[in-house]
Length: 405
Ligand code: HEM
Image 1 (spheres, rainbow, N blue to C red):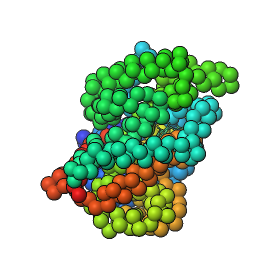
Image 2: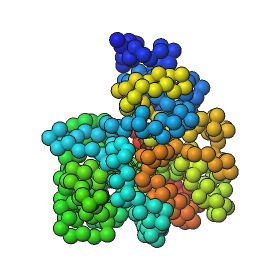
Image 3: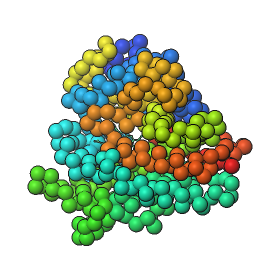
Image 4: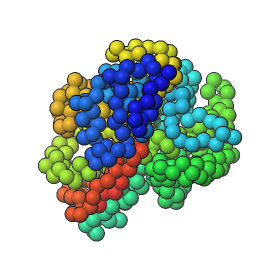
């Protein structure tokens, strides 16, 4: 039997009423006014695990406790990634998003195909190209003494790197940018489905081309992979390639946008970063803790009790990763950005078998962007009158960011 509060989703009978909340994650006006402050504030108003019944992102257990999230993410036998993504799929051409929607042990065979390319050493070979790219983007606007950061740097930086990595033409940048916006930020299911179709047609052609003419790119590597001597089938190849598009573009984009907004508002902290070049890796880690952008969804496979909370098979669970990174039991004064903080596992990329495959690539993109930008534009501010607004959705960052210097 399920119970329903007014204007809320139903909650199942095994959920105790004292754990029910309606928080409006990703969509309520309170969230959209200041998402990270909102998520940090959840620790004052909610227990570490609660059941959300708000129509936006509700109908699921929400986890904000750092220790609980670690336990969930490290126990795939209890918490599956089955059906973890919200993107529309053509029922006539079913596929899984690979590797995210594959549980162990099968999951390993897919990760092994690309792990060498995405290891710290693997991504290092891209560093020179990234530095050149960052500078060529900055060249386009530095003399104007202003730019719209999200479209002139935040978006083209990861999209161009992605296209080069995949072995796709950089001339496709604008098309990919539009696809990413329509698929990941439209609340319109019809537009999302149409965009998904266009991406599907393009990627299937690209896969066919790479099968016929192998190259060094990621698509070619996936298309020619034969783990254990068995080639991947068409649906596996497609599911892998499209998940990289979904996982790798918007996350870096939103992270850069959040960090640049903070930098623009905090001149003393910019100067601190410039004065501590030897600490750049710790700086990137702390910025990723404070400005993490997404969530990790799971479905309960086997009954389990966690922190006194009973979860049953089929229950949905979402780890609110930015909130976990503000857990005051783990990070003292969590909303203060402190580059000298003792190192603890942060959850921007999650942990466990599904921890982000692109984490080293993303870290390098952020590091290079910070270094090259601050070298050439050390002083900048949000343009007076520019209002900061956030898009509802599963990847959090400001919509537009007009900067001046
Ligand atoms: C700052 C940027 C990024 C953030 C915050 C981020 C975040 C995440 C998170 C939270 C997960 C785990 C999801 C879950 O457990 O449910 C994940 C998985 C993944 N990410 Fe990222 N990501 C970023 C960049 C990238 C990039 C650049 C790529 C590749 C081009 C990438 C590819 C993947 C893949 C393939 C997975 C699935 C891993 C698996 O299931 O084994 N990500 N990412």
